[in-house]
Length: 353
Image 1 (tube, rainbow, N blue to C red):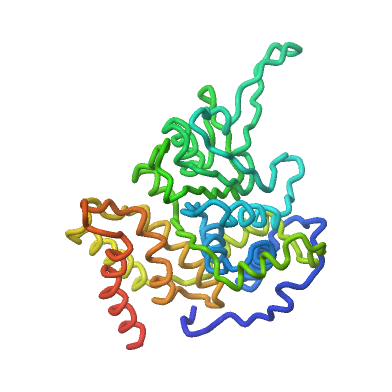
Image 2: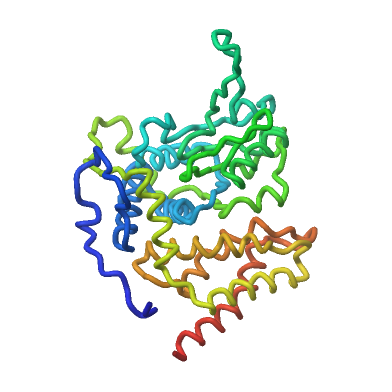
């Protein structure tokens, strides 16, 4: 695959078309153009629902198509629920018998039990048998609000869902959907009555995204449109199966050179060797980084991963996985310093071709 070639796409065709009502058997998403069409349809719907968050929307979509999960560090009322709901509502089930919701919101509290999210065994007196009643975690997109407000036992139950794609109740495992995607949130300013996530659990999140307040113009636009009757434009939804197929296509058809792998490993090693870090990033973070980089390359119209992609995603991928020495400052600075030399080497090797 030629790294200098791009994806030739007509955005009008990508976003065009009626809302899907049925899905034919067999793969529908077979090319990178098809895959990017799925991404752009979802992006258009979410952007309509939430204003001034284009950068966050892009990272969330990168995580979704990269097969990871997202931790949002935000302030109350910043639009996280609207973002997650818009993402879930952009997906249309093509398996009506699975009974899964497109979107579920879980409010984590100190008295929450693991069974409250995973489900419980219910006894049926008619059959004298126990049946599993699925919990709200069985959905395509799940918003976990204030993840650090519940006990470690519930956090561990969610960890199994994220890491293994399944829940275990009474020694029986039940698989979650292939599309299963978690958006978790925590308030950076509120520490009273919380259970901070340990690094082992933070490492399960592909990204940690810090959400600042939107711009002045975006807030004015929100106020101007609030309360006014308006109809949602006819924006197409995408099938659940199309998202799953798009993931497979971008992994197969977006090229990742050995130089990209070397750059990622070199960044990780420099983070570990930095005297400001007590614990560096894991090998898992490097494995998760590859499909995320492929997703970003796809969204930016390329069939190859570039140094630009590594630079853009390095901070959200690595910063939350680093344990800092007390008083050493912010992990973001460590990542930014660690990536300089590997990115320079990667850029030079690319230009010398």
